[in-house]
Amino acid sequence: MSVRHRSAIAWEKKLRGVFADIDRKLESEYGDRYRLHPARPARGATARPAHDGLFNVGAAFSAGYGSKYGPGYVVEVRMLTLQEVPDDVRREIEDKVAASLRARLPRAFPGRELHVKRDGNAYKIYGDLALGDV
Image (cartoon, rainbow, N blue to C red; front, side, top):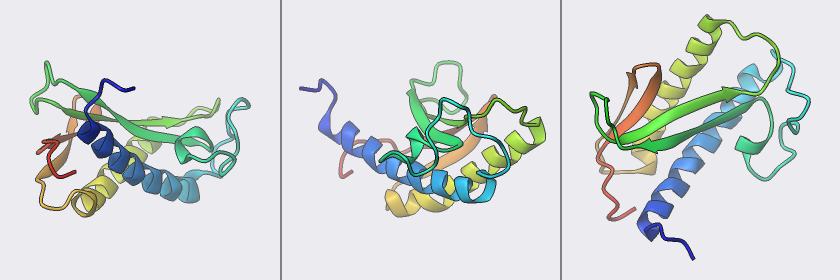
């Protein structure tokens, strides 16, 4: 039994679906540019894109302390490689993730005003995070 509210679970399930689509897109575009970490399964080897391939894209809820945007989801873009990834390439990938989120969130969460903006060193999803009608 989970102590989390069923609407929060439904919200995050939808959000994981958005990130899975973004992960697949990044794998297609960047997956062959860097060698996969030796302990990481190859793309498509698991049931969830976050668990295999070069990328693990997702978000973690933050209460927003110290943030100018308040509570929201801090976007995490991890590349599972032992190779050095230049800062400009990381920034390019993060920017593409943010642009994809801006395009996909309105379809996943219609009628909600959600924003994606850089907050410090990471992007953040914030706005109407209410749990009703997920």
